[in-house]
Length: 128
Figure (cartoon, rainbow, N blue to C red):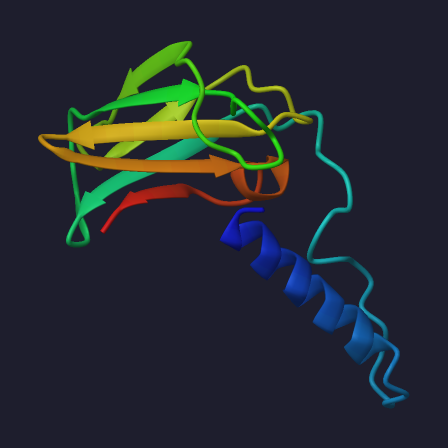
């Protein structure tokens, strides 16, 4: 399971525990985390950096994982290049799928696989 997804789930669990702690604070009216994918969000943004500096014109490949129990990038089916801010945008994603992104800069390879809970709610960061 991706580290970001574990972090999101841990934060959600802490929020639920805090709501049930018996404190006098009001119950939140909205949840910080949706328990299901949003079907209207079909775009992911991927930031590529080297030592924190955005990298323009870098090809980023998109795939689905070979095996969802241990996500690793599969065969790429789309390649987008980062813009001058180091961000590549991917459209037409299916909200219930896990996607993987790979960026190669020289001999350095960065990759990340993420479920909807990550790519629908935050930018994917590839780099250092």
